Length: 262
Ligand code: F6R
Image 1: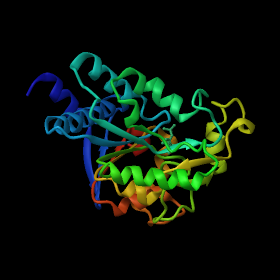
Image 2: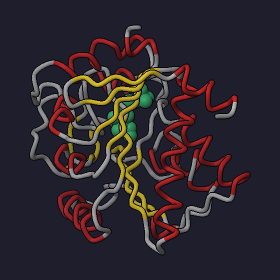
Image 3: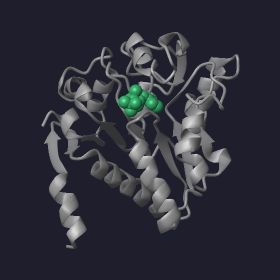
């Protein structure tokens, strides 16, 4: 075992809580571990001449993961040519070039820096008037791609995953949703005021997310501790959509010490 392997193993600890696998460590090291898992999935599928279908998230939590993927692309020959991506959500009413649109975020932090095929990138955009048709088409595209191999999730302070706000049903699929006040106030600084934060979004549903073969949820910081604990070990309820992850057999929760409360 080389020195770096020893170092990594000593700072990330692994626990099982019921059916939930939990990895706790420094945000930087955990992000590297997750990027390594994505790298492994991409190369394994590429070796078989297959595409890999990734469900991706925006927000502050995945930034180090995307930075590491870009580094691996530049320095280690990781190609995204066989990647098909589906983002979790998109705000309603923002043009793609709006700096707070999720399209813009993904371009800036990942897509424009790697060799993704433009036609393999999907976001549940609602720029069409017929949001229901857009949502249905999104579900069909995920199914046509063979379903999600791997899904990345952050968690909102109100327990949302994607923009499945409290009250979202276990059976929910991609759809238009009214954003919760906690979600909008958390986004307010980036939009220079809550009045500028969109009131609606389109999000993949809880059921769409649970359809992924493997799920990775990341949470950083003390502000996420209470909601993470409740989601992992409290009742499974639509009042806390992340709690539905307890019903999935292949979820890993990646927490830093603040989120883990350790
Ligand atoms: C983003 C998304 C949201 C975020 C969550 C956490 O695409 O679907 O559920 O993952 O709001 O956001 P951050 O990472 O900014 O704390």
